[in-house]
Each structure stands twice: as C-alpha cells, then as structure tokens.
Length: 292
Image (cartoon, rainbow, N blue to C red; front, side, top):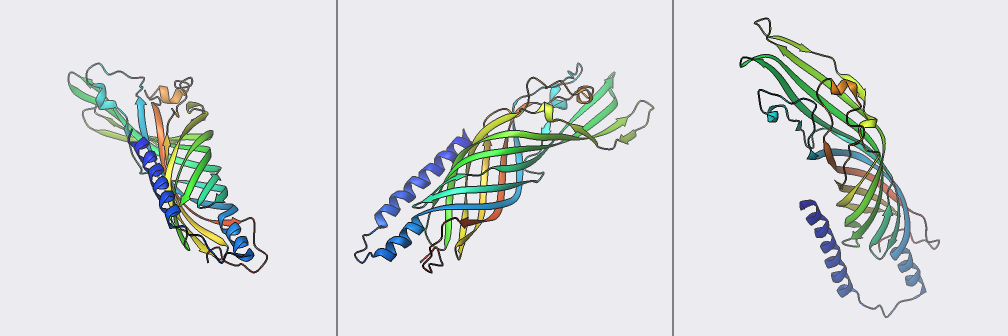
C-alpha cells in the first residue's frame, strides 16, 4: 500500500506543476517566424540517449518455504533473514523519448543485474544439547531485461531541469546464479569443530520466474550543455508479481539437500544512473542552445 501512495504522490506533483505552468503562460505579441521555429524546437523533440549506474535491492516475502521442519524447536529459528539494500548491482539503459511541452513519453530498455542475500541457520540437538549447527549464506545474482514505459514531467524549463516520472515495466529473466557459503559447528566430539566450506556457484535460472512486472516512480535532473542534456536519473521499481518459479521451486537437488528452497517474493530495486540525451532534430539557423 505504501508503494501505491508513492505512485499517487508522483501523479499529484505532475498535476500541480502542470496547472501552475498554465497560469504562468502569457501570449507573446511580438511572436515572429523565427520565434515560432524556436518554440517548435523547444516544445517538440525526439531524444535518444544512454545511461548506466548502480542499484540496490530489497525483497518482500509473500510466502515462506522450507524443506526442513524442526521437531524440537520453533521454525522461526531457521527462518530466512533477508538483507535489504546491502548488495550493489548494476544497470545499463538505452532511452528513446518524445518530448512535448515539458512531458517526456519514454521507452527505456534496461539490462539489470540485481544482487540480494539471505541467511538461515539450522541446528541439531540431543537431550537439549546442541550437537551440530549450520549457517547458510546465500547470495542471489539475477539478470533481467527490463522493458519500461515512462511518463516524465519537467518541473521547470530552465537550464537545470528537475523532473518527476512514473511508469510501468515488464521484465524478462536472462540468467541467475546462487553463491552459497556454508559454515558448520560440530560439537559431537565434546569440543567445537568449525568448518567453512568454499562458496559454491549454483545455476539458479530455473528457480526464478521467466517474467515479472511492476511499477516505477522517481525523478531526476537534466542539465542543458549546448544541445545535449546531461542526465542524473533515480528510479524506484516496485515489483508487483512473484519472481520465483512456483513450478521449479524444488528442482535444485543441491539446495534441497540443505533444506533450502526459494520463498515466493517480490523484488524492489532502487536504481541511480548517469548519462546523456541527444536531440534527433536540430535547427539549421544557428540556434545552438535548447534554453533561451
């Protein structure tokens, strides 16, 4: 619900800024042909650009799953513990946008490498005495092709142009790997014997859903440098559907032997990028800046 409030808040900002902009507009009595050409250039334009940056991920669990059910202690002790916004990922984006009177209608295909981690612990007891403990550290690296449709609105029309944006996206799974580190404490001999196994890389593509979708909210800044716009962009992607494959949940034998299977979950992603936008239509009459 909180995520929907943020999207609604972006809508309200755009509506308010549009209303204020209309109030400020005044007719220009000295409007000539050159000014008309300049206005067309400023108010209607195709932009093509590239941006790249980093992202952080958090997980929202819909339903928890496990292959081990302890009989002598609560399942809460072995529940997965997810880290939020801890492991950085990366993304690269191509942007094609049509600009009309402060609005951008934008398609931004993105390669996204997301990274999140969870841990869980198991123990085996005999007569109330812990005989064996196991700690699993599981790092998931998931690659998606994100296909977003966005509407952006310039809050001001100066050289520095802050904007807000909202949209929707669909994603296609490209690849996924799990990096598993297991640490064990063995007390059976009367002492404590600790063993940390080297990290195993496990192919996990089949464990994730082939597609998922979500909403996007955010903002950014464009800085006019001649006819080019330097861009700082911030997006928060709200995952709205399950990213786990419900059909293949138990297909990974190595994970099943450890008692671990993926939960049903959605994935949120905070992405920060920098790049540049280039106009596809220039004026031929020496008009060198987008801002008068």
